[in-house]
Length: 258
Length: 237
Image (cartoon, rainbow over all chains, first blue to last red; front, top):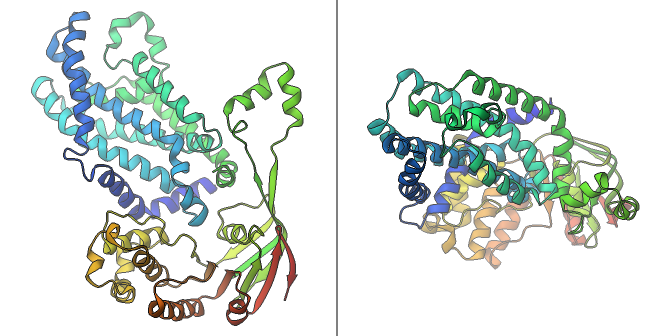
């Protein structure tokens, strides 16, 4: 129940984390000319170089492949950046934890909000790219808010757990980074799921695939398979109960682990 | 009705050395069979007892001074009352809004203007823009920053930014005030003004807990006294 109380207090402090999230972005890019567009440029260059090469290697039509790759890359960047930051959520807020004692959910909301802003920024590329070269289906684009909500809810619950362990065990940060790096290759981001139709069951076990799918499919003109929604709803429920159970234990120790 | 009550509160800090902080040692301890286990089993994480069986109870009107050497546990005690450190044993009861005057410039953004930073600090202390607005003029006036208030804090001297932080922290009253050393800011003239403001701010609080080395000050401001040594209360009056 303390977890719910923390959530309620954290939501009540929305003005704080909304503001701090914006400030984080502003500060990070204050003096750079292109600001957060640098992230987009990196992905664009990668897609521009790798796109034609892979479409040749995989023998698939180039334009539709480029659209597929750019939506995948930018959506993946949002997910992977969010997970990369999770182990450090409490470490970077050590001063607040000992001297201000804010509800813990504030730090997670701030981290998610910051990454969501960057994601919205990447829509500047995704939307025109898919509008010009892909094909929109209205019913599929309507699923984007639902998919995004599922990803955020899951990330929120996972962040509570990873942040606590990341504070206690400082190896979690590099471990997360390498897991994400490997995940990038085993998740259908630059290759398509139907290229390995034999191993579909294996792909369906990958939670990152489902998170990616529910925010990518809306731009590619189809609705993600029901299994993705079922998977993410299930993990959200599990994540919720895990936190309900572990919250007090972890919260009472995090300050000592800093 | 405000209250701060500690019953047999004990706080211990685990000390993880670099090796223990690594995940591997925990895994090895549990799952790998061999010589390592024995050595590690006897080797429990050492801990430092920062507070041991602390008891006191404060009601409205109580102003408590905590004195003691460095490392006696004064700051830890304040943080425990704030709720940051959960006691490993014993009970802590607090009722009323708490404000900690530790780290009053925490969250200051050097690239934002002084004015913007008032809102940042305000939000951290729990006030949104509408609740903070009535106090704005007073904060700006008191800090004596003049038109500097609209420049980035980066351009301030450290004294100036302390003055701003101080002005913000002492504006909105709270039931319980935790003070780690009397705050003294600014040059001679400002320092006197700040002293008066802090006294007024404390007078509005229902309960004060002041950790200090200055016995003379403690006598003047407080009506309850405890002296700590190595995490224990060694005398009270």
